[in-house]
Image 1 (spheres, chains in turn brown, purple):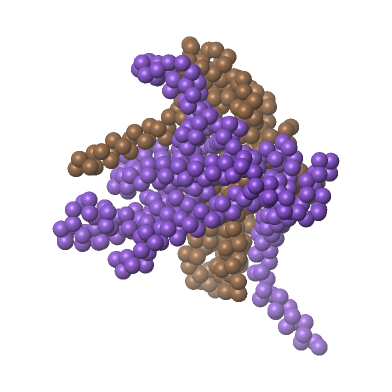
Image 2 (cartoon, each protein chain N blue to C red):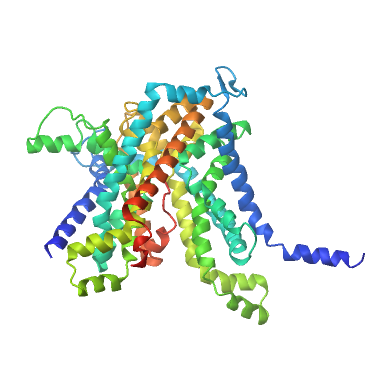
Length: 267
Length: 297
């Protein structure tokens, strides 16, 4: 079992490498100096407070959250409609439509977003929130669609028929028979779209106005301009912490492998 | 005449479900297909310093991309970085994926979280971390000084190896995910049969595990390659303008120089390069693994 021991050591070494860039921001955020330095000089929590008091960052955070929730609601609702039609009806061009719905996955985001930038300018929608929302919808829809479609295809139609026969109207059938069966997929699709939208930098960088940046773009601009205070690593650490907590919760509730099955290639 | 209306009503009633397809289809046509077509057309327009572009068709943009040594080096840089990051990510991920499929209980949970949770964290946070680690006077340099391996500012950031490292790190979770599910899918009966017939663990690995996971290896390689070659955020923060890459040029020409026709031509070049090499990878792997021959296994 020597081979297995080597494999184990290797895995743990890589495990540390994977987490190193996330954990390193903590000591840097704890320094007393007002520039980033490692090892930290003195320990203080003031940069965390500073980061949480920065109005521009808070506004950007609020904007990102609204955008992510709107994207997720939008994507899941339309994907739910579309997947029922695609799954339940046999029509010519069904496969073609399915391919089309998952199309945005295969186009690199930087190419798509350049197209959108030019397109939105010609419609006078440059830098608008609606434009950003539509762009995020386009990149999250394929994943929502795939996840929900897989779940809808495993739903037992007989149960719906029985409910209808027993006198339930379609709304009751939807609420009490269908939704319970596809709940997991709906949550997965929602969370996936939310995270993808909240974390996305490339699209928001091309499409958001200077005064209305999302949180990742605001952080990106500060990082690129340089001269940042340790409040940026402090905030980064908090973001990473929330993300990991979310990961563990999703793993415990619906299982991360099922959840990530549709996520391939989201960057 | 009277019967026509109910028939028409029935016809509509029966096809009401089409309405469910309308919102998604319309939005994707307008905000996915049309922008791509706009981009394709823009690549053939003429740049104009005052009006941004004039709709006079020209091949000038592509001629500029393919006749200038600078843009050729940009293409080869992008390809080099894409390939190296793919090699690193897939090679590093395979043993991890293999180990993950055998791990159980709390170890599996912790490892899964460590290797996949970065998918939930915005790239900006991890890139900031790498930035802190790699920067001159950063963590690695301090470590080197403490260990007596060298002193003076480290010149590692802003190099291709640093860029490959960060790209491979960012895209490794995708490779782990695909490879793990593909290793998991190997039937236990096949491994059992090989063992019963006296195959050594080594030969089981080379003659059963690897061939059967080849589709997973190829699809993870294609994914990591596509993501790496079209990445903008990581190169711009790690190497900046120092190493010319296609995605960085797309940003520079579209948002700084405001030469949309040329930016579009570069975007189409990036797409063409990605597509050609993706299909080449599929072809080569088909040849190498004699796909179809081991389908009987």
